[in-house]
Amino acid sequence: MSYFSDIINGTKSLLTGMRITGKYFFVNFLTRRDVITEQYPDNLETLKMFDRYRGEVTMYHNENNEHRCDACTLCEKACPNGSIEIVSDKKLNPETQRNVRYIVKHIYHLEMCTMCGLCIEACPQDAIQWGQNFHHVQYDRGKLTKVLNKPGSTIMSKTKEKK
Amino acid sequence: MEEYLTSKLKTQEYFLNMGPQHPATHGVLRLLLKLDGEIVQNIEMDLGYIHRSIEKMCERDTYKQIIHLTDRLDYLSSHMNNEAVCLLVENALNIEITDRIKVIRTMMSELSRIASHVLWWGVMGMDTGALTSFMYGFREREMINDIFEETCGARLTMNYNVIGGVRYDLQENFVKRVKDFIVHFKKKLPEYDKLLSNNIIFQKRLEGIGYISKEDAIAYGLNGPTARGSGVSCDVRKIHPYSAYDRVDFEEILFTEGDSYARYRVRIREMWESLSILEQLVDKIPDGEHRVKTKAVIKLPVGDYLQRVESARGDFGVYVKSDGQKFPYRLKFRSPGFANLTALNKMTKGLKIADLVAILSTIDVVVPDIDR
Image 1 (cartoon, rainbow over the protein chains, first blue to last red):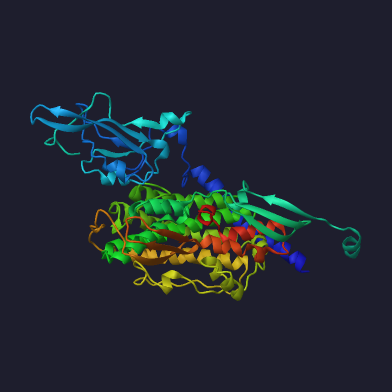
Image 2 (image 1 turned 180 degrees about the vertical axis):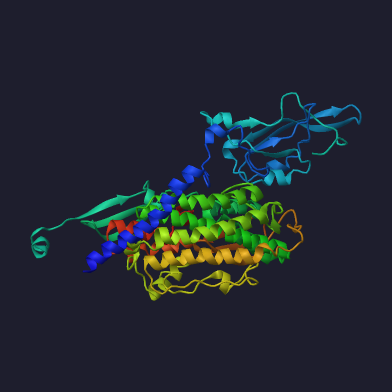
């Protein structure tokens, strides 16, 4: 006897659940309410990530192609994975007659980066900051290694605007 | 007929590999099943497919750098894992943190607990053959992920807690978003019950399946919702209150049945409790600093330190042995999933393969947490 009552109760509880799924299927489909699906590759123009989104490490350059990095290597030391390598050199500053360190290459290995944010926190000059780009797919792993300072860029003088 | 089958037709025992690439094992977990027909006689677990030697990596990292590695253990409760390391260092160095930090941490932990349980609920339905719940669970989880993404900067590996506070202050939208979520989720949770919990077919799949008694649960060292389904009181938030858990009013959910359905109901009720904690805190976030200044190089005094927190899966512990350097001499994570998984053999013996999948789902394993 319990066999049949089980079937009846099971069908009843199934119908209760199907009322919910049916409601979502018909009502929401017709009224377009509560539709949360994003048409991902087609909405790239309107898709905006949040300001704090950690996509990649970038270096801030102003319109004169100047950055704020003075090659102190604090970001390199703060990184737990060795994702940052700094190649620096010294040159003579004609005004002060002193040797000043400058970056030749600020190499960023995106393939090793875990987006922990310790380098950006460690930077005393706010030279590096987060970028919101998340399209990192490449066919070659080597292409993920980037040089952050743009070619021909120089360090901006300390008196200029900060961020 | 049945007599004839058992006497004349001899079944042969055989071994079957389940995993490491099986969707029901929630990651790369390999189970060696000893089967008689469809009946599971013994399970041997083979771990090591996602071993990244995180504990060893912690020994070469400073205390600030360790925190981001704990995101990668139990990735569904990364806030709690971060918090464990931060609390350990703060307690060891007697760093006083403000009430605002405590409340923010508690709210984030409860949000990730809900996110984790919602995901579990979806996967639970899928493991027992209902695909709809998976989609519905992800719908609610998306709201929490947006909150995390806006305030912490990432959806899963937040790395939001730092030693002496939290990385950023709350976004201005945070309170509004959390309130919206509470209103939304209070409507959806009864729907979950109608859809899955009260379904007779679903109940028959779980009731009486995967039974483990209270004594066995203690003997196996089970923790979290898995143990609370057997009536073992083990909520770290109640036993050793940390952060703001001593100032909120919540209930430790206990069920005494000890079967899969009890474990299922523990988690559903825990989502209600987490919601009530969020409701109590969301209007009372105190003002103050979100980050206390600490030394640039953090060195722990010589000695042993232990910190426990309640992650979404249970009692997560960090044990550090320090020799006074800026790196820990030895660090050990006590993960809740490993202890829970050991009881799988006891729970499943004599049941069918389909039951094994359901039981594995109610234990709620996250393999990167088990296999570090």
